[in-house]
Length: 191
Image (cartoon, rainbow, N blue to C red; front, side, top):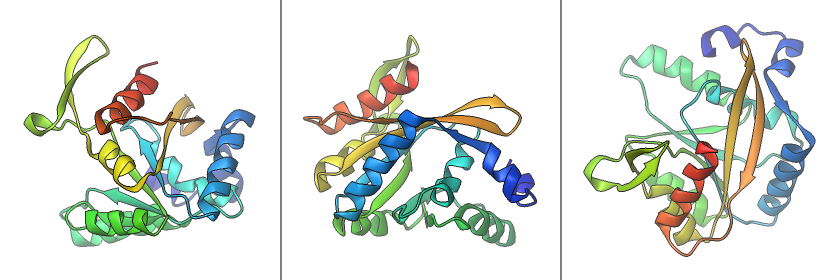
């Protein structure tokens, strides 16, 4: 999707990500709260067309700066191109190698951070049941939400055709622990 989308017309870009009325309302509420300085964590799973979520700012006036943590590629020229493509609509990319401090600083400033939440955390994570299997999930999203009193949103792009998806957006309820945040996000994904 990413290499092809570089050549999409404006009309073709408009068809990539459908945002229905419910998702639009949640995103507009998120924008309002962000404009008042409320930090937010945007949780996104590894799934088809998750790249398309970087296009959200083009469809919403006042969409806040969102710092997104990503895994840099080992080839510098390809990495520079991918970074440029992912940030062309306003997302600010932070390398996973050294961007966590900037992500924390952004939340401290009342800004937004995007993070993949369905990562295998190995021995450092929390073991949960997901899709009837034991998996290791990271508590990092929950730790960020708790530390900075941030709102948490799960964005799910559901594939509806070739390079087309429907976006659903869920605001997670207030949670008492970091693990509870991650658990709620995984329940949304599972459902």
